Length: 279
Ligand SMILES: Nc1ncnc2c1ncn2[C@@H]1O[C@H](COP(=O)(O)OP(=O)(O)OP(=O)(O)O)[C@@H](O)[C@H]1O
Ligand SMILES: [Mg+2]
Image 1 (spheres, helix red, strand yellow):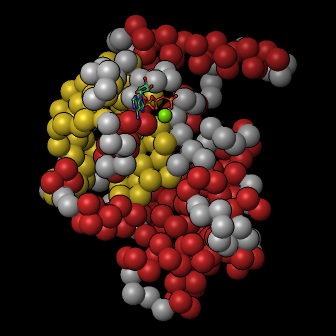
Image 2 (cartoon, protein in one colour; image 1 turned 90 degrees about the horizontal axis):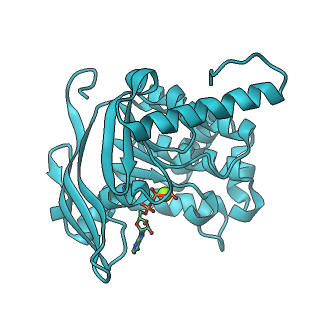
């Protein structure tokens, strides 16, 4: 799974996560790497450990979950950093875009106030400079009136708009790695499509590596270079997106791909279209 130039930005080795109370292994001996500019999709059924894996990289899993293994970002072992050092990495070097835009923002303050504060932790720009950068990034993701959007409270924006604001923040932050955990599931099909377009542009613009968790194999096929398939906390298959869709080896992956194709056939039939399984 080497990338364009073989440099690995992120290296996850032997990651295991266990629920301390029940002793249950939730993620078991998971290892994968992310090359510069690569987009790696993680797919798998609900409860297979995708979000735990993302949060483990960010060190955002709750206490009560014991984590082992190493997570190396550009040569730095994140599992060894102090909480304070980790806070500096989060946001600036590693940026997570969540499924639910609402929960990513502070509901009690206008979006712009919150964004100013987040950025002030990492940069010593003046207010007006921060605002100018944010406005440019928001315009780039198709938010037509950035200053108007920044005056709004999170509940006043739609899910699609909040996703765009998070992508805009990532543009300003220029992180090394972006982790997107099901960023389109809460959106309707048209908005989801637009948000995926924004992710594609974000990658083009920043060249950031990206982990993209999604149930939507159509989206995965569009955006990802490589795919990891998880089942019951283990990686059961990995490969290039093309190989996974063309000839998955593991029966579970074949099942995922074939149910997606059956669904899109059914969808096309319902829409009165041809009987094709394209996404
Ligand atoms: N804080 C926790 N304490 C104990 N068990 C947990 C905790 N968080 C998650 N789990 C369990 O770990 C397993 C993996 O959860 P995870 O959220 O990573 O799944 P997922 O693949 O992201 O699923 P989905 O597709 O539904 O988002 C699940 O069985 C879940 O119940
Ligand atoms: Mg999840």
